[in-house]
Amino acid sequence: MSDANANDHVPVRPFTVIAIDGPAGSGKSTVGRRLAALLGLHYLDTGAMYRGVTFAALRRGIDPIDADVVARLARQVELTLTDGGLVVDGTDATIEIRGPEVTRAVSIVAANPEVRVEMVRRQREWAKTHGGGVLEGRDIGSVVFPDAALKVYLTASPEVRASRRSKEVTDLSYETVAADLARRDALDQGRDVSPLEVADGAVLVDTTHRDIEDIVAELVALVPS
Ligand code: DC
Image 1: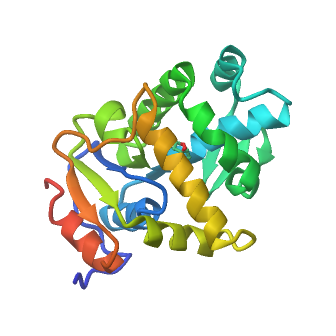
Image 2 (image 1 turned 120 degrees about the vertical axis):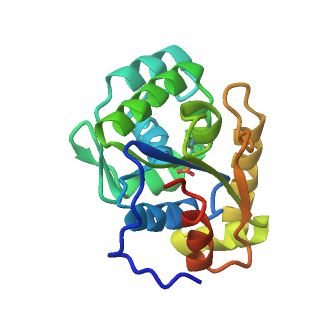
């Protein structure tokens, strides 16, 4: 266990990037935010960016399958990540990007190679302007920052992941959430471009029965100083 609290800053080298990847419900956001606070780094939820592009497409009546149109939109859309929220072209989309419509369509948008090129470009740019940071997603350690100071792959049993997610989306049953998670796992792991996989050199952490503070303490100790 760590006895550090959120106000303690563990010193890190300038431009430290920490990559956290893993499937939905594996604990990336909780661990990532906590780690960023402890290390005095900014935090980026890259899944919210793919959700933002999906939101923008649905709002304009664009079919997510229409790859060229969605790719063009991805290059134009203004995505502003606030603390825990997302503004898409001036509209607060924080709630909608977690809703069932965006959640259903986002895997298709995230499998679009040109959308990925644009999101990766923006993520690298974000890290440059923020002096590094903790980035979480599916391809951070494998594609976006293969030279990250620390690469982490979080995992957990499908049951625990579904149970965590169904607590967040209270209007859907556990069974619906579990089925959607399994469908998205298959799409994220099976796509041709940047599939979800354990990056070379990543530390594998199973969060199923682990305490958050315990995991964070383990990871802090692995950050090069
Ligand atoms: O983490 P999340 O559930 O909010 O991610 C939404 C979708 O975006 C999910 O289908 C995985 C995909 N994604 C991705 O392909 N690459 C990332 N770096 C982040 C998310």
